[in-house]
Length: 311
Ligand code: ACO
Image 1 (cartoon, rainbow, N blue to C red):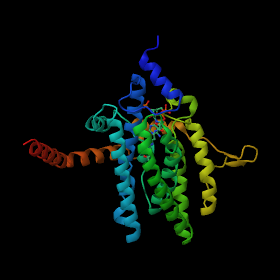
Image 2 (image 1 turned 135 degrees about the horizontal axis):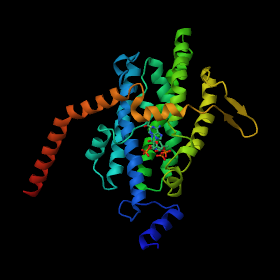
Image 3 (image 1 turned 120 degrees about the vertical axis):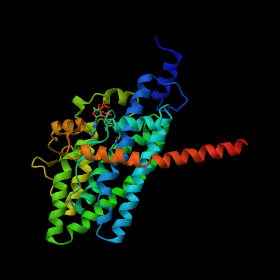
Image 4 (image 1 turned 120 degrees about the horizontal axis):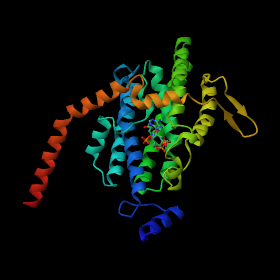
């Protein structure tokens, strides 16, 4: 039997309206959003590490300033997303505990190492490029606070993607060694970038329900295809070769046919066995512990201010 709550929720979803924090919503909808938004927030802050690794080694002051701004943006994205999750009745501190104890996930992509400066270009171009393809549709997510957070995130991701492309463009127009470094970065980041979109539709546990609720607007495979269609012509502009022997343009559909990534690697990395999982989590836990005094000082200041207002 449908309750009034189910009726009004469903009517909003059917009309492609937005669900707001005080609206009634099914438990499953709330749980799915908390899971996805928390994972997304965790990805943003863990994602600061692979690039942060190159701030002190950026090849020029200009590159360093840009990279610092970019890494700072990722912290900002994490903050919007934790704030969006909190509108669903969870506490940011609890979400961080779940991340630190390995009970909540973050994106597989951030468990790969950044070995050369070209990796910073590849992350901007491919990883932020994939993030844009995945997140632009989330601006139309049925949950209002998540959708609105995504608007600004996507604008910033688009700057990130261009700065990555520009790094690689410079390397590809440099010496032979620099071009080879760019090709090596593409070779290593291509497959993990395809895996960012998640398991194939046939193995995706949440897609069907999330799409019915208007949380996800497209399936994992559809977004992966869009990413390939967008990225291959850009690789051509750079003069780089996508490391997929099966890649070809299909005139009839106007889309690229490509080889699926090895999903056993995705599952393995998600389970904690990627090249940098342990290092990433340990670094995050340490940063959190080292920052305890900042949280304590901020809380003490806030309560002093509140007491002053009352007094
Ligand atoms: N890395 C880690 N875990 C993943 C990945 C991945 N690349 N892809 C899927 N998973 C997990 C899912 O979280 C889910 O696990 P859970 O049931 O324990 O929560 C499981 O694998 C099955 O996958 P799906 O059923 O397809 O999961 P879902 O419907 O949530 O789709 C997706 C996954 C596409 C990542 C979705 O959650 C999403 O769009 N999230 C928002 C975007 C995001 O988080 N981006 C992070 C990287 S971008 C950046 O930070 C720059």
